[in-house]
Length: 319
Image (cartoon, rainbow, N blue to C red; front, top):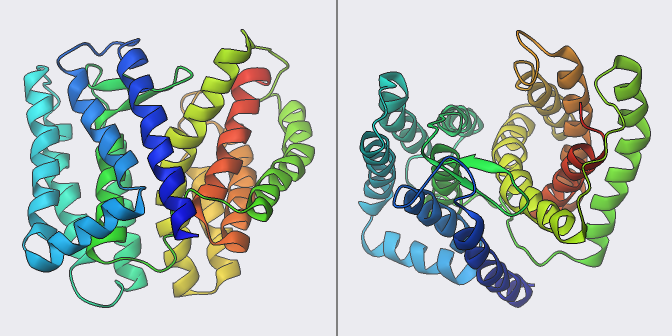
């Protein structure tokens, strides 16, 4: 399994990095500012590769202070980029060191895993960091989705803290899915579609609107949604929030509560002030993603379900 994860991880890096270089600037970000996002995206991809994580763990064992220095450097990286593009959002500027510091402090160092409470607190700090948006600090990923620098750095930091500094046994980001894992992930898509699509039409949130422009765009969008939306969000919600709540209470309770939280964070999106329709469907989707994570134990399986669901919605059922 490790060999399969290694090969799949390196293939992912080899395929994705050139695509980011070619299409990343098709948004508001321009060179050289785009380079900040590109480096953060490459770091995320590299941390998916088992050999890279093992190399990083060896560096931490040899130089324990790196467990603090790396998060500090990531925060400084984001702050410097914001200053260079002329940002005047001082609250966002201050959130970089605060969120990175809180997450690092709560995860701490040691041989064991952080307590559920600390894990949950770190997840909240990383989620706040991921929400920072600066117009000039973004990158377009394959298929047209735009990601902020803060979002990418928050995922980098999550991967560093939970796979390198204090690895969580449940934080399985192996890319090499088994056929049964992929089947469960796609089966969850089918069950969710049977429930959520009628609910979406009844509530008026969904409508039949095809945005299909060709096979190349469709494949690129699916790939981008799985790698850069599905995986990052599953790292934060299922890998940390659901896992922390499951350890605090029970796996079933953690799954249900995490799904509700996943729905609630979608309340402010797409229709001010609050979009209860979106929140309802997001909570249903969260149940599917969380179930896949519980059954397979692999975050990439949940990311596959997540990415395919978002692809169907964005390509054929736009609100």
